Image (cartoon, rainbow, N blue to C red):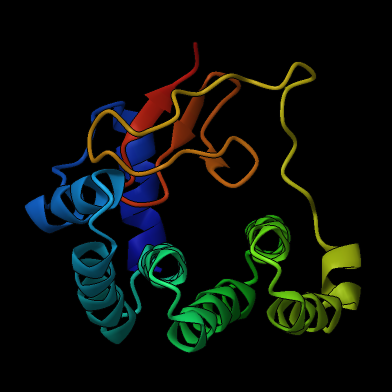
Amino acid sequence: MRRGFRRLIRRGSGEAPQVPPAVQRANQLMAAGDYRGAAAAFEDLAKRADGRGGPRAPFFFLQAGSARMMMNDYAKSMEHFKHGLALLSEAQRYTQFYRAGTRIIQELKTRKLEKEASEISTLIHGHTLAIAEMETQQLPNDKPLLPTHCPACGGPLRSDEVDWIDEETAECSFCGSPVRTG
C-alpha cells in the first residue's frame, strides 16, 4: 500500500526520482558489453529488491537473465527469466508478464534454444486464464516512440513493456523515472 502511494505521489509530481548509482552502473555495464559484470550487478540489485518486495525486482531479474544469456550461461539465464516472470505474475502485472515473456521466447528462439523457449511458453500459457481476464493497459492509438534507453539510468525502454503514466509519458521499469515520447 505504501509503495503504491509513493508511486502516485511521484507520478503526480512530475519529477524524476533519484537514480541509484548501482542501477546506472549495471545498465552501463550491459550497454558496454561487459555481460559478466552486468549479470553480477543486476543479480545483486534483483536480490536486494526482491528481499524488500520492491517493484523493480522482476526487471532486474529479467535483465540479469539477458546478461547471462549473452554469456551463454543458459541455465542461470533461465532461472532468472523464470523468477522475474513469476514475480510479475504474483504481482498480477499480467500485461508486462505476457509481453516480457513473449520477447524472451523470441530471443531464445533466435539463439536456437527451442527447449528453453518452450519452457517459457509453457510458463506463459499456464497463466492464459489470468491473462485473458486481465484489464489490459491501453496505449494510445499511434504507438508512442520512446527513446531506446532511459535518460536517467540507461536501462532499455520497450513501449509495450513499460507502465504508461499518460499518453506521452512512460515510467522506466528500472528506476521509475518518467520518460517522455519523441
